[in-house]
Length: 135
Image (tube, rainbow, N blue to C red):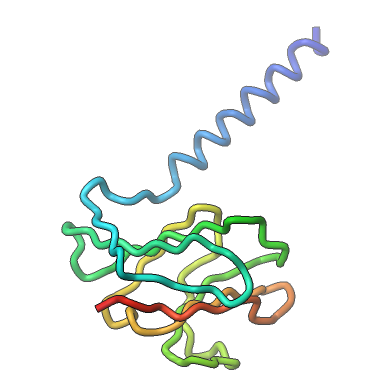
Protein backbone atom coordinates (compact mmCIF):
# COMPACT_ATOMS: atom_id res chain seq x y z
CA UNK A 1 0.00 0.00 0.00
CA UNK A 2 2.91 2.36 0.73
CA UNK A 3 4.29 1.74 -2.76
CA UNK A 4 1.16 3.35 -4.23
CA UNK A 5 0.40 5.93 -1.55
CA UNK A 6 3.88 7.45 -1.06
CA UNK A 7 4.46 8.51 -4.72
CA UNK A 8 0.96 10.03 -4.83
CA UNK A 9 1.70 12.10 -1.70
CA UNK A 10 5.00 13.31 -3.18
CA UNK A 11 3.37 14.34 -6.47
CA UNK A 12 0.58 16.25 -4.69
CA UNK A 13 3.10 17.96 -2.39
CA UNK A 14 5.31 19.07 -5.27
CA UNK A 15 2.39 20.42 -7.30
CA UNK A 16 1.14 22.39 -4.28
CA UNK A 17 4.63 23.82 -3.81
CA UNK A 18 4.77 25.03 -7.43
CA UNK A 19 1.34 26.66 -7.05
CA UNK A 20 2.54 28.45 -3.91
CA UNK A 21 5.65 29.77 -5.67
CA UNK A 22 3.54 31.08 -8.59
CA UNK A 23 1.04 32.71 -6.21
CA UNK A 24 3.76 34.55 -4.28
CA UNK A 25 5.55 35.83 -7.39
CA UNK A 26 4.95 39.53 -7.98
CA UNK A 27 3.25 40.40 -11.24
CA UNK A 28 2.71 43.47 -13.33
CA UNK A 29 -0.53 45.30 -12.81
CA UNK A 30 -3.12 45.05 -15.58
CA UNK A 31 -2.88 48.83 -15.95
CA UNK A 32 0.92 48.86 -16.28
CA UNK A 33 2.22 50.50 -19.45
CA UNK A 34 5.37 49.17 -21.08
CA UNK A 35 7.98 51.86 -21.69
CA UNK A 36 8.99 50.99 -25.25
CA UNK A 37 11.85 53.49 -25.44
CA UNK A 38 13.60 51.99 -22.42
CA UNK A 39 16.27 49.36 -22.77
CA UNK A 40 19.13 47.73 -20.92
CA UNK A 41 21.80 46.01 -23.01
CA UNK A 42 23.81 43.48 -21.06
CA UNK A 43 27.52 43.07 -21.80
CA UNK A 44 27.89 39.27 -21.51
CA UNK A 45 24.50 37.58 -21.13
CA UNK A 46 21.16 37.80 -22.88
CA UNK A 47 18.42 38.88 -20.50
CA UNK A 48 14.96 40.12 -21.47
CA UNK A 49 14.71 43.47 -19.67
CA UNK A 50 11.43 45.37 -19.79
CA UNK A 51 10.45 48.59 -18.04
CA UNK A 52 6.87 49.56 -17.28
CA UNK A 53 5.03 52.25 -15.37
CA UNK A 54 1.94 51.71 -13.25
CA UNK A 55 -0.54 54.60 -12.85
CA UNK A 56 -1.45 53.35 -9.37
CA UNK A 57 2.18 53.83 -8.27
CA UNK A 58 3.59 56.80 -10.23
CA UNK A 59 6.75 57.10 -8.09
CA UNK A 60 8.30 53.86 -9.36
CA UNK A 61 9.14 52.06 -12.57
CA UNK A 62 8.83 48.28 -12.64
CA UNK A 63 11.72 46.28 -14.06
CA UNK A 64 10.93 42.80 -15.40
CA UNK A 65 14.03 40.67 -15.85
CA UNK A 66 14.13 37.22 -17.44
CA UNK A 67 17.29 35.38 -18.53
CA UNK A 68 16.93 33.97 -22.06
CA UNK A 69 19.26 31.12 -21.21
CA UNK A 70 20.28 29.67 -17.88
CA UNK A 71 22.92 31.68 -16.05
CA UNK A 72 25.61 29.40 -14.68
CA UNK A 73 26.88 31.64 -11.90
CA UNK A 74 25.51 30.80 -8.44
CA UNK A 75 23.74 33.11 -5.98
CA UNK A 76 23.09 36.01 -8.35
CA UNK A 77 21.99 39.35 -6.91
CA UNK A 78 20.72 42.34 -8.90
CA UNK A 79 22.06 45.78 -7.99
CA UNK A 80 21.51 49.31 -9.30
CA UNK A 81 24.24 51.95 -9.28
CA UNK A 82 24.78 55.40 -10.77
CA UNK A 83 28.47 54.72 -11.43
CA UNK A 84 29.49 53.41 -14.85
CA UNK A 85 32.35 51.16 -13.80
CA UNK A 86 31.50 50.35 -10.21
CA UNK A 87 34.10 47.91 -8.94
CA UNK A 88 33.18 48.81 -5.36
CA UNK A 89 29.66 47.59 -4.59
CA UNK A 90 29.34 49.66 -1.39
CA UNK A 91 27.41 52.45 -3.18
CA UNK A 92 25.15 50.11 -5.15
CA UNK A 93 21.53 49.46 -4.09
CA UNK A 94 20.40 45.86 -3.83
CA UNK A 95 17.22 45.23 -5.83
CA UNK A 96 16.98 41.58 -4.87
CA UNK A 97 18.03 38.06 -5.73
CA UNK A 98 17.81 37.22 -9.43
CA UNK A 99 14.85 34.93 -10.07
CA UNK A 100 13.37 33.69 -13.33
CA UNK A 101 10.78 36.28 -14.38
CA UNK A 102 11.67 38.56 -11.47
CA UNK A 103 10.00 41.93 -10.98
CA UNK A 104 11.97 44.76 -9.36
CA UNK A 105 11.20 48.41 -8.58
CA UNK A 106 13.26 51.47 -9.47
CA UNK A 107 12.55 55.04 -8.48
CA UNK A 108 12.50 57.80 -11.09
CA UNK A 109 15.85 59.03 -9.75
CA UNK A 110 17.32 55.61 -10.62
CA UNK A 111 16.28 55.71 -14.27
CA UNK A 112 19.76 56.88 -15.15
CA UNK A 113 22.29 54.31 -14.09
CA UNK A 114 23.48 50.76 -14.42
CA UNK A 115 22.21 47.33 -13.46
CA UNK A 116 24.76 44.87 -12.09
CA UNK A 117 24.54 41.11 -11.71
CA UNK A 118 26.72 40.07 -8.80
CA UNK A 119 27.59 36.50 -7.79
CA UNK A 120 27.67 36.23 -4.03
CA UNK A 121 29.36 32.82 -4.19
CA UNK A 122 32.19 34.09 -6.43
CA UNK A 123 32.27 37.56 -4.84
CA UNK A 124 32.47 39.08 -8.32
CA UNK A 125 30.49 41.09 -10.85
CA UNK A 126 29.09 38.72 -13.49
CA UNK A 127 27.49 41.22 -15.88
CA UNK A 128 26.33 44.83 -16.17
CA UNK A 129 23.93 46.84 -18.29
CA UNK A 130 23.38 50.54 -18.83
CA UNK A 131 19.78 51.74 -18.58
CA UNK A 132 18.99 53.81 -21.68
CA UNK A 133 16.04 55.63 -23.16
CA UNK A 134 14.14 56.42 -19.98
CA UNK A 135 13.08 60.04 -19.42
